[in-house]
Image 1 (cartoon, rainbow, N blue to C red):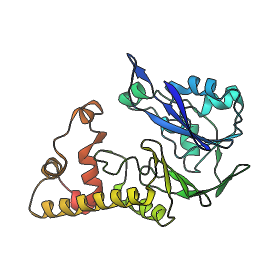
Image 2: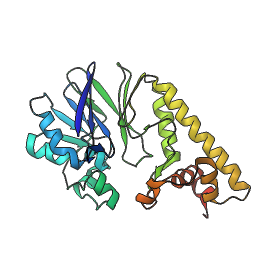
Image 3: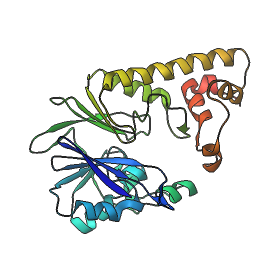
Image 4: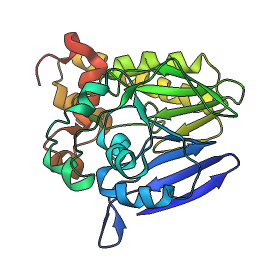
Length: 270
């Protein structure tokens, strides 16, 4: 599934694999001037290539290496000859794509190997100049793109939602909090998120996410000090795990968030 919507100079591209006509998990790529930011998943790559034909697209960049953000890189390169750049830490991962968990292959597809160039400090188009801001946490190679004159922050998967309650097992919530504080200091007015879409109250939304996670961490520490297990803390604060945790075999689960917020010292034991 692909559909696009115009928001002034920004085009939002909604991408998702469908099952019996229903989108499994939607991610958004963005076109601004002649720059395509992210390429969706392997399952939607052909649709994206068809959509890009006839449009003035000169360069492609990735916020990070995950398959729902860089999954269309290879086909865009091969079919349309577009240059692709990704964070330097993502380059070797994309060149030798690891075998994904089953749920990820079903929802997004298994990406092939692709050779991309490393991003520099700035990405320029005819009208805009985007700063490349390293923002690890969701994954070590994650970056955001900030256009200071416009106040735009293309945030990839750094934000996602004000009240994120699930986390991948390989994410680092405490590092993500530092990255959120870093982009908050830029004072963006428009947050352009791969999942939440366009968020007008950018600073307010970022502040509320920081406050929510900091509050969870404080409550979790207090409960651990009372002797509750990590599982009991998670159930108390976020409720029991649901279908998502079972489908992903715990790779995407509430307990991962609590464990990550507590860090090694507070998360010992189950």
